[in-house]
Length: 426
Image (cartoon, rainbow, N blue to C red):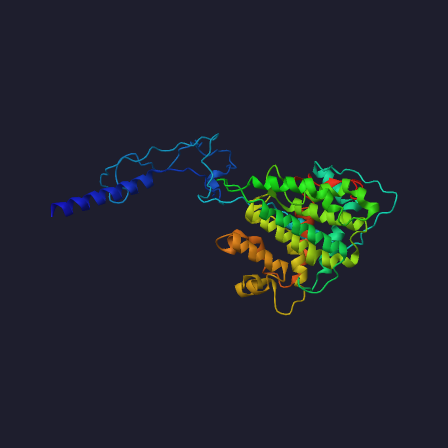
């Protein structure tokens, strides 16, 4: 019985202490009130009594250790009063919980306002040829602006749009023109894929960057010129001095052992150079996407998995993908006006399983879900948002605008882009 009474008294004392502590806290924030007649100047000349402001001015101040409710003594003394001076006001309230992630750069407005890029006919070169070793030119945003105002950028981006339009409404397995050039390039990529099997990854503890990739890339650099000579006509064999650097930079960086959209852009630039020389013709575009680019995509995924290539310049969850961009553009074009599959169909596992081998966009989604764990909306929120768009036509046009803003206008990516005689720095 004594234990029960003693516990209840202690509990009551603790409650009184808490109440007293709360009452003793004094925050003298100023209150707004309507001035009364006594606060205003009297017409007869009498002034109201002077009121002395004090930072701790209060009607009542609790200084004794008594409960504000019952008046009984408390077990704990009240906390000391806080005195705020005019030069040091009370702290501004801030929420306890702040965003746990870095917000993405606000480029959405630039993407929305940007016009949809249009397809352009690639201007072919004619003798006399002036091939030269390409070099890097872009170092600042002013250089980016200069590049985008040039015909070289407009023609290159128009070439990418033309490739996208060539695959519109077609499955990968659909019949297309396969010229000798297209077949030769496919054979070259198959050779590079075979080298991956011949150079196994080294046993190491690092998560990214298997050093065996450097051996693979070294073999690529040693043989790239001879690979180009397989399909180049005799009068264009001297072009290897300019097109080989684009080709070598299309499969990642051997020093950093990484790969990203900049390397993918170099592969597109290599194809553009071949189109400038007339080696790839406009009627080859469908085969270039459905045969060449698909093979290139398969090779890059194998390199990423076998040698654990680190994503170069990835935006993390705020990016479209860690490695690629163009297959989403081409894949969205494939699905334009499809009778059954809509952008939201990417959430249907049966569709991904049965049609990812025919449509690049679905293939990309299936690959992401294979290599990343967790909810799709958490690790790929941008792709999840795009799935809410109603038509593939809007997806395709939006991705083209996004490619221009997020890839071709970024200094960290385009600072590695090469300029020579085929792609001129103007």
